[in-house]
Length: 289
Image 1: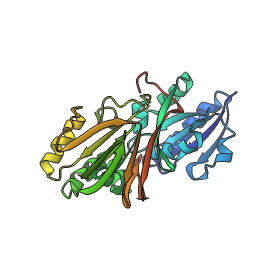
Image 2: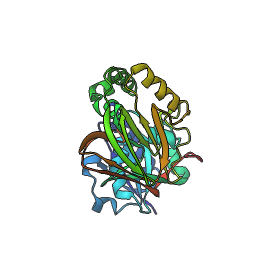
Image 3: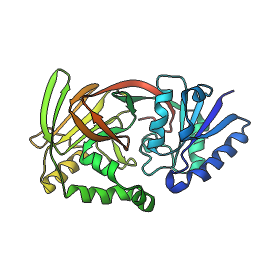
Image 4: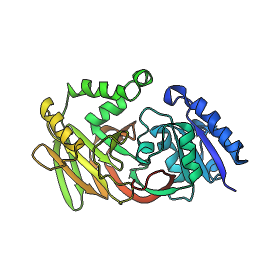
């Protein structure tokens, strides 16, 4: 019989996680399942080794903290979406309704999905620098608590008014790219708002590649034009933007601030990024990830 570990983020989803936890506990009790419940800060490798299924109650940040413990193992991740964005859950077509999300776990349909390794960290969605990082990592938690995902839209308008270019040197597939850029996005999963808006409709969590988008323009109108071209899946490399797919990339930089799956990260020195194919098992409601 499978053993379940509930990992709860009590601050997620405007503190709905406490209610969701009760629903998960009831679900497991009704099935006479063996389980234990902990908060996200109590998680450690020795604890997680004792369980077969890890149920994450929270958002993408909660999932990101669990990934290092289950990568390249037989353990299966179940997601109860309860965060600001819940982008991975959306990509896997896991409903935001807690009962329906639990039904996905009960159906026992398991997908093996790719993960990004970023130096000694892991990303299951995307990482970003420049404009993308400012939106994700600098939006105040108080604003997210009040407006939910719409807070990122408000922050996006604000940070677009002060675009800054930074020099990046990138190595991939025996190529060197030196560029002044306002925004860099490296995406394993491209969706940015549920499954309605994406930096790449073709981003596939199972293809062993990640998508790279580099926006060079500083002019506000041209920046939004190029960004919209990405969102509408017109990913053409030109004088203002660069797009490509790869399985490995090095970014040379002395000091840079970015985000990994929505969590702010300060990088010092070179950044090595590579794909780990089909490295995480997750309950999914989707045939096409």
